[in-house]
Image (cartoon, rainbow, N blue to C red):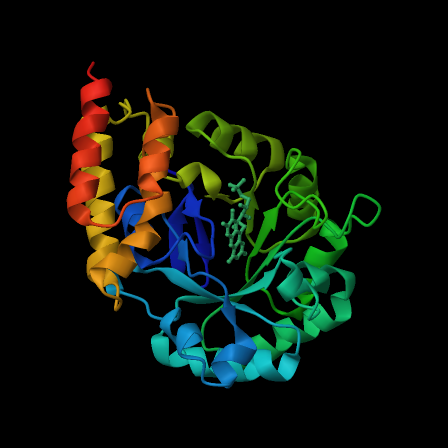
Amino acid sequence: MQTITIGSHTFEKTAALAPMAGVADASYRLLAKEHGAVLLVSEMISAKGLCYDSKGSAELCRITETERPMALQLFGSEPEFIARAAAMVQEYNPDFIDLNMGCPVPKVVNTGAGSALMKTPDLAAECVRAAVKESSVPVTVKMRIGWDADHINAAEFAKAMETAGAAAITVHGRTKTQLYSGNADWSQIAAVKRAVSVPVIGNGDICSAQDAAAMYAQTGCDLVAVGRATYGNPWIFKEIDSYFKGIPYTPPTPEERMEMMLRHIRMIVEGSKKPPEIAIREARKHASWYMTGHFGAAAFRARCYNLSSYEEAERLAEDFLEVNKE
Ligand SMILES: Cc1cc2nc3c(=O)[nH]c(=O)nc-3n(C[C@H](O)[C@H](O)[C@H](O)COP(=O)(O)O)c2cc1C
């Protein structure tokens, strides 16, 4: 099995979980890890929020030992805050600090952070240098391919981040203005790979083991990261792992899907500090994703969005299996 090394960690060249705010929380990451994700990343954490003692931001920094190796991802556009936040998160012992230079959300971009940093490469490089100075672990960068179709600067930008001290670079093959529409442009990931000598993690539109293999082949990237295709589907990591190891892979049965859905809901509810009837709301979207592609999924999805107790989820699973008998 081929491997890559970032800092002191060596990874099999299978697949990492892409960071997803509001989705890839600790329960989600643990399931991904259990199914073979080789690297996990936290939800994005506001550098300024951490510096101003935001409880929510600090909560996002928690790492359980089973999640390792794991990166904590910071966002911000002011090197002073990035530096302070990088110093503050050391107490959580992250394996990496990742800097978000790809988020397209207006609230983030309007402060000059996330993908807006791709328009200000000098400031972005300063942020990297600030983090590197304060961090005892490698600092990595996650970027897009540019701001819009007329401003694609993936290769130069990545090179500048490498020069500033980035130890690896993840590239989501879309521009900021594309958001999540259209196809990811993998040729730009290949361009980044040619431009830098640090490991490149390719990302965007991997929905199967075949897609992962195609991404490796077309871009020469060192690792791939999977985002949305993991919704209700932690098995995708097993699928990718099996593919590269030549092990036969059998997709989950409807029974296995429902067992995993219920386990995922229990993990969310038990891991939450909120009362169960509130915590279950966090589980609704995840529950609906486990139904995707199955008979009656649309109707079940509506029921998922009204889930108010674990017992209701159990009944939902029973009904789902009833209409999805082999
Ligand atoms: C709901 C959601 C939340 C996301 N949150 C983050 C984030 O916090 N940090 C980040 O760098 N990227 C974030 N992303 C982008 C993903 O990491 C990834 O780059 C993107 O979804 C493309 O990969 P995919 O086609 O495999 O989904 C998010 C994406 C989604 C859909």
